[in-house]
Image 1 (cartoon, one colour):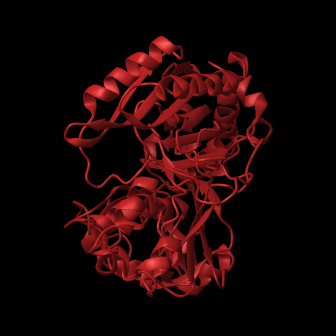
Image 2: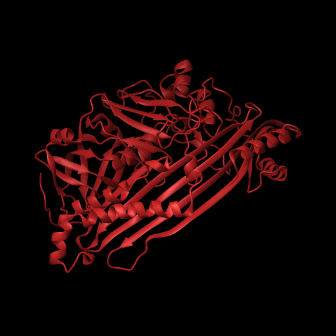
Image 3: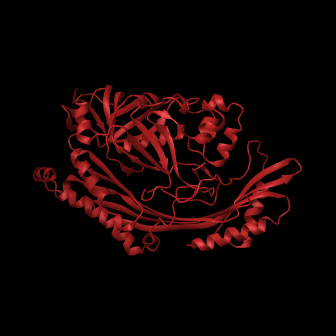
Length: 519
């Protein structure tokens, strides 16, 4: 895995080469080196298993070049990349690909240039993660697995069931998931910002699903972090606890309920609906339910949502973006008012130059420019910051806060009778993102709320939520003060999510007959 200094030298040398090529008006070089370490978890009480399976790693490094070229048909923009070669020969091949791929783009204004904001986050990664051994990776996997097994063994509920069902193993206790460690290094330089910018970052996540198979009970747990010394068995123990609590789940009838969305559902709604709707590219394409509403009320006045890519200690923080610009805080919704958008340089420039700017944003001029500062141009590709493509717009750390937060117990007591939804799946917009309509399936960690407390668990995969995200945002009735870093499948960002109560959420039953619970 090449060092950051090697990446820095590579982009300097590449930029020097490019500035001497004919017809090159502007050029940008991005180099990255990423390593992903994975410990797969697989424990089954009734089938022989190893507990920790497939500790493995993948690495890739290389560089990408974006070139702005003068041609007979006008200015052309092209991108090319080359893996595993940071030498001048690799630069030549990447540049040749960029030239062959170059096209006229009338919406292109320029490569990124300094915004005037200073970089505020440096030396924030964990060098122990960058130096982690194979043995430490396996140990991390066993830490999570042992936490889940310890929780299972300590459960009096499972002990009672084991006496009637021929032993604990016959209950079908299952722990599955992974521990994932991501190491990222990058460097970038361009003709507009010739001083190379470098960044190192480390991320540690764990996700676990636990089951009591004989009782069709399932629970999940997760953890996020950046430093090895903070890594714990939290994901395993939480998943096992939730699986035990899900035993003997019930069905509930279709209807409109006051629902407390747990941290994972809050994260899933943000990842699939709210964050995509608060990006400058969505406004440019007129595919957001908030079209023309910058500066207007779009949510409950108690709700504030912002992205902060430069806050030390948050899992998704980065020192600079993949455009070489400083990360920082971007307020999206403040006290219910839409005040800003996530953006990359390209989208900021083309939206500010759009003759329909006021129609699309609701404001123009300096007000629009302040809402479109490009702090979120990243080249995320599932395995780190990828040299193989141009930046897109991605969140880093989404933080959800409330003006009047309460404890979890107070929020449940306030709801009195309703539903606690702890995990959802297949959350996606229907009728297009701009309409705000969405659907998702309740797949676990959920309970009926009765008389101000969590009552019977809700059986997995028997409820589907069908609602509108703009209505959900406007009908928030309570938010907890405790937030937890949360990730969902295929998400780039980490959401620091509280639990949020919303009134009038519509749920429908899935393929069932009897109704075991009523409210």
